[in-house]
Length: 71
Image 1 (cartoon, helix red, strand yellow):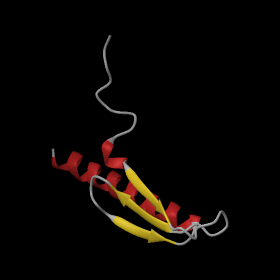
Image 2: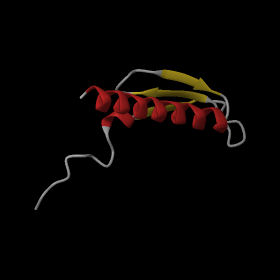
Image 3: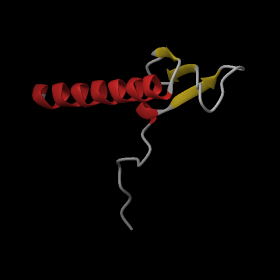
């Protein structure tokens, strides 16, 4: 049996999602933190939360491309 060295859930994409006590389904608000980088961002809507995750994933892709170009 050969194990895949690439994790399906890499640590670089590990987040803590903290919701405000007054958050509601129609007014989601809180803070998102990447556990590996420590990058934090506050959000006050689902759209902002989604944009924060998308931005972080884009930066991961850019880092990988830069690493691959440097090899």
